[in-house]
Image (cartoon, rainbow, N blue to C red; front, side, top):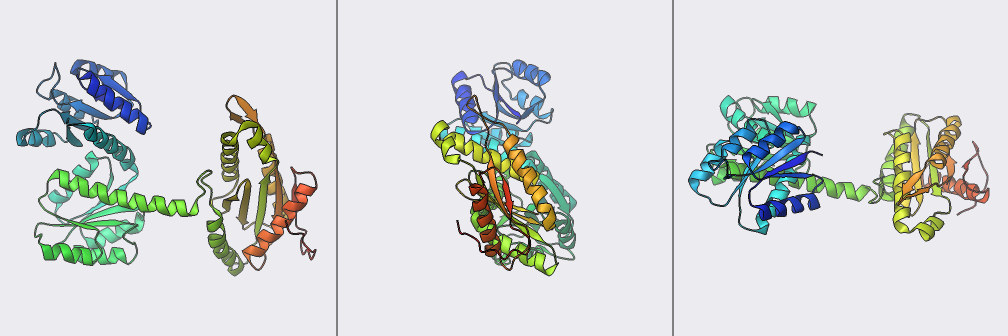
Length: 425
């Protein structure tokens, strides 16, 4: 992660900012108290990703440091002890990310959240749609200052083509009055494919009024802004809409993922796995289900503590993910038990796949608190498609029970065409 350059001659304020950033964010802070020392740091290091600058420094009382730092292409936040409309206009004209008035702890928190936002923006795609080149370029420049990935379209039809090739766009900022396909129609077309929780839409117009704003919202927009606008208002609306999309994504992620290993959870296994099994049946593909259980896991928790046990589970999760395909489902379904659903795999190849997986886990050395831990797993496999996923899991679970009875640290597969009565676990 890149470093944060803080240039502030008030040592107490600078230290407060450094401690708060390093406590909350994964960024190291480098401090300077003069323009000369700041420029020397920039000459010596190339891993700064953002700068926080005091507007008035002992050797640069007129804000010259802002121009000097921005000229190096470094995103910049300005903080100042005094504020006026003249200072505001001057600061914004320099192309800064934002300005913050030194008033109290809440301002430091605002700075920390802003840095976090800027650090995440390079992964966010924003589409700007406007048939007028200059307004479109202006919005693009504002977004690029905040380090968003920016795409452009000259009308609604072109915007739909861009979205077709970039379905991971998170925000569309669109003008209303455009040829071919206006902002209203574009918004409706977007909503036919993407929900409000997938792609946010901000409508804009120089003919802004309450009815126009309401019509945009009714057609599926998340927000509306009149042109011309204050930069602060634009950035706030953009950030709020992007953060809402991210918040919903986190909620969705947490519904299907195990909190400890980040593998899929039991709910996802049975919901997505049932659909995957139906897909395999329609396309005459085989699939296999394996149940995996850590051997004597309770002894690890009792001897080394639950944090050590958690680290073991995380490590096993990483091993499983690294050795299976993205098309397979790898889930933690409870405690020290995992389940794998592997698709498009011949039944006769299952033994080799899961035996190599067992060997990889047994050979893996897990370092924790200056100790080296090694664990083994028992694996039960249902190597061929069955009528339901429940049935496949039940068969694999019975084979896992047999693996435990045979001494653990082994793979037991259900024999092909087996009619054997299975002993429940």
